[in-house]
Image 1: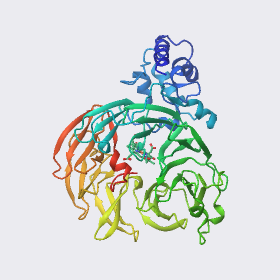
Image 2: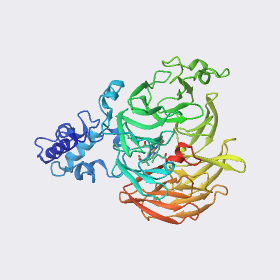
Image 3: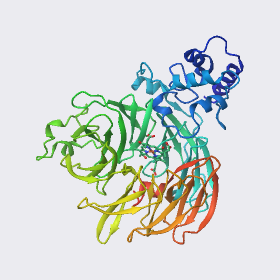
Length: 519
Ligand code: DHE
């Protein structure tokens, strides 16, 4: 790949320098200017897929200005010499048109996309001297890289290129040695933290949402919008183990909004975008009792083992009254809370009995995936931000009553805490106060400090070090930074320059399912 990249880039640039003759026709302009890098079917090549499913999720400069001016620090050239503003607008509109046909993307195509790095050589211990359990990854979306940080010294051990537009949390193997990273174009990358080297990558979908690892670290599930499938890969060598078509009981095909690991249940839980069903997929070869043993379950007849008689990847459908998105799970993964489509309430689903058991008034689009939980007065509470309102709701996870609403300076995206800290941290992601980070007392719900470390910049997402003593905050800008805070005194200690850092992920917090982090 590295050998053909310069050739393709050279031909892109060469084409870019040719005057484009003839009347404006965006399809012709695409063939002449874009096809080399973005593929004949607009599904990507060395450049990303140019389809509405991916483009509408992109933050930053709009499509027309990217075509006109190019993209800094990427191989995307500027086309202002070749195309006038009308043709640029028409080309942008063309790229936002859905593809007439989605090419098949099954086992054969996924297998053909798999690229294992020939020079990769495994090592039997880390090639560095840092604490392997305190390694923290920073996803830098500005130029599509990940920085590998020593969580004690904050030295950058490596900075490697990722596929374009990484989304969601990277997933660590249970021993913290390997990490798997997913891009919105469906690429899954495997990286060896001990050797500081990429192991390989595979395109498991054409437009994808997130990945989850099985409880035993053997399988990686990829939730796809395009095609409407769940791809299961072997974590060992990224080979395809299974591609499940996601079709509801009434035969409606559905996109998969997200896939989650439910460790105690030894299963994956799937949120379906277009069907009023939640799926549970067993990752335990002895899954039979879980899937068929509920004498009282009205879902008994819905259990379908597909196709393994042993129960591995057996599927269970849980029917709900409407499609639910964006799940928060309680600690034992008995219940989940999902957001309703109308954005005004949440629904509690008991996964054991397979039905809805409560409804919560959660107006203003709760972002349940960012929910975190902790103990307060002997009760387990969870908190969730809202994407459309400047508030955080706190819910009692036994009664499912909302017990507090904390007013903030604007709608937030992420909440974070750690078992060793008395506070939780809440960003304000949207609106004029997007540069604000609130630090809130977990017991009193008082805002103890409002940080504004980079006035005017988006300041968001927090990760703690392994012991919870340091909080790492992203200044989410192209010339951004990760700011290291003392998590007790709330004093700034250090600023590490980064290119639009988004999420940060500490090995220990992730593999131990630390309280206050996403899973
Ligand atoms: Fe995310 C996690 C869905 C937009 C950055 N986001 C997740 C997860 C889901 C999700 C289901 C959990 C996956 C996981 O970690 O395994 N995100 C969605 C959406 O539906 C939404 C609102 C619309 C969309 O574009 O798909 C959305 N997300 C965004 C963004 O615009 C963000 C801010 C920038 C970006 O990179 O696209 C964004 N999402 C993130 C991050 C995480 C994430 C950084 C991981 C957080 C963590 O701490 O684990």
